[in-house]
Image 1 (cartoon, helix red, strand yellow):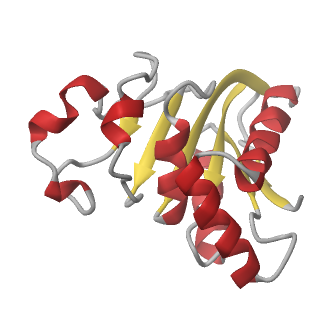
Image 2: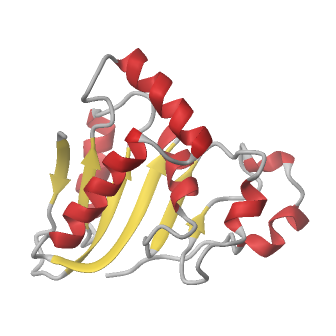
Length: 171
């Protein structure tokens, strides 16, 4: 699977982060975000989730996978997380960050997935999110602004048991 890797210039070990793209795929903006994360001391890898077929074919699979919270695209993201975990420079602490469509993945990966932190940036929010987000490990953190789309339609009380807050995974 093709992926873009950005390596910090500081000596290892570094925390890792899987950077999940939006619907536009592997773009200049995504690479710039990975580079910025590396500049902050994170070993960043951005997998190309569109590598195996046409964009439309991949998007059909991705939307199906997101609904099930399982499938080929989740396997590809797990391969990226595993690669980071096995990288000689990685500290073993690994987070996930996603943008738009990728934010939906970051949200879905927040509970019980082996990530130290999750950053959700404009990710979609399934109707049953309260049920499975409540199972999240307390040490995980999802970065989301409850007043921003798509969270805006939900009352603050709906997120009480979900540990939604903003914390930083620091080097």
